[in-house]
Image (cartoon, rainbow, N blue to C red):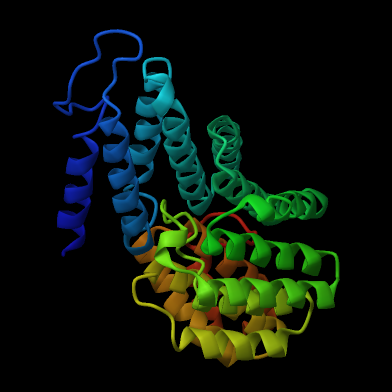
Length: 336
């Protein structure tokens, strides 16, 4: 499907939901909202999540945030037996809105959405969602170079493990715990967490994760995060080998993420002193970043630019530096 037609289809689905014109039974007072409304929100979120990997956040962030508002308006009117499930869906939309804000480079807004998601996750009583949101908050702290909060939040997510049903969610929690251990320089602990995440991702079944909350945390995803952990630990050559192995098998459906991980490979190659390898992945990553409007990928590429200035006398390096610099945005590093 062409990009314009796909965006239009998503927009059409969005406006057919509560608060945007859906012809469903109208509320007649407190507790009168039809519980089937929740199913419509769930289907919309699934569609938006699928679109995100192909299109990037720019075309989706408004729709996602509007649905959060529509859900919030229903909290006081939904019947008691459905209230917990509605809080679950609200938390899922708030987390997704935070993810989109992060990818647009607006970390302040992203963290605000995550805080709201955690509040609603606790209100719902769903440990899978609570653990996942804590993992995401750890990522956000890591993005901003806040080591201690990143480690503490990752550990808080792990403490939910005994209550978490979804193997994908548990895998996501453990891979972030690996990043936290690497930030503290604990190589053995980091690699042990990665091994647990890999085993969980390999064994995960779709039925484990009814909200497809951690469905992105596949075997390939864990493998590429292992490369990032090696980079954090300072083993850039080993990280480069890991990136090269996993990117050969990267799923086509995760197009935006391919650009992000290629950008991280570019940083690793530059740190390893390999300008040609850095240019190879950096050029492709920049194209994908432009296609998907991913400021996150641009930020990674800007980090590589700082490392590649020593080779600027090479015409191809100078051209790459100019191209990345013209994209604007700020520096930083993000994981997901």
